[in-house]
Length: 150
Image (tube, rainbow, N blue to C red; front, side, top):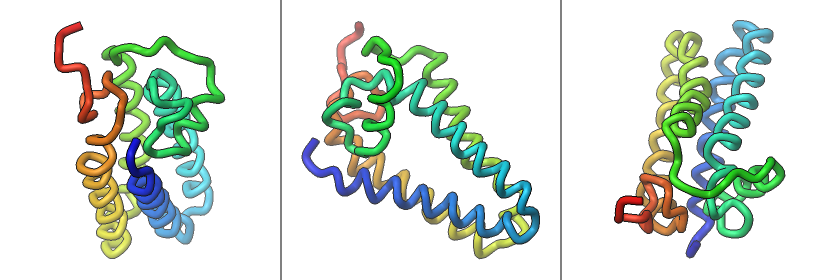
């Protein structure tokens, strides 16, 4: 891990996207905003359990810092290639966080643009600035992944 600042900034941008969607949902339905917050927490837990807890970098070398610290509190999983179920549950957590607020954001175009702008910049930073320096050789986005078949 050479520079953790990109990982921290990318997580902050994702947090700002969630805050933007909460800001758009809350005036229309405080109950739905609360439900979305629960979905964000559960989606994050699903990502931590299915992906981060299996990452060999979680204890000392997490480029995002916070997910690694949280994953180290979870029961240890055997490090190794991610299974289809690991990827599926990770994708479900990400999809829940990103797709649920779209029902309200579509009625608030500035918030919709801001939400997807934050997400786009975060994804760009993760793929092009965080992943190339990551040492998780099992992740398909990692620059140091194991290129030989296991």
